[in-house]
Length: 200
Image 1 (spheres, rainbow, N blue to C red):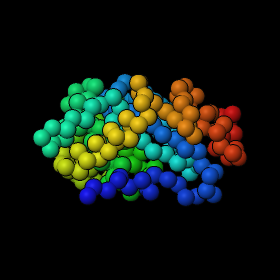
Image 2: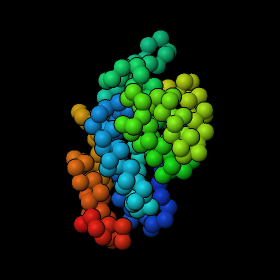
Image 3: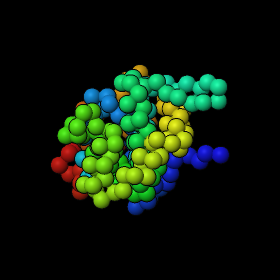
Image 4: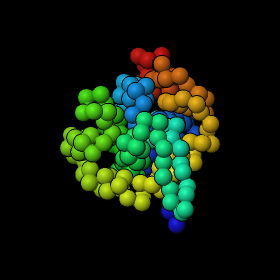
């Protein structure tokens, strides 16, 4: 039986229970707005405020899961290559044990500095090299049955939220437009840490 992704790795343990801000991000690998948000707003917040956040990301977006004759396949908004990109993101979350590192690796794959649309084997290798991460297990996962299982799981979780557009951002369960993401995350904290001093 397939186990869930390693959720425990994406929750910080530094703060008392209930103090961290819950952030959920639903996105897809090739969506231009997702790439802008992930690169310009999400990654800096992860790097700066990650210790105060409980973050879960869902690399599925507006894809569809097709079950036929015992086989699972996917239709993605930006084509089959995006389905593979989403699998790379899902597998990075599963394979990389450090929360912050996994999220930054995925943000790296989405940067506009990557060739083509990013989130492919070249991007995985480039980000792996720059971050000293072995990209081979991530690619192997994405190409195999585990990648299918992970993406199916993220699809099931995404459908529960019933969003129409991505990126779909929730801060403590409340939809956020992402325009002032860092400020809004800081405003949601019960106690304002030094890292938020210049954001509020």
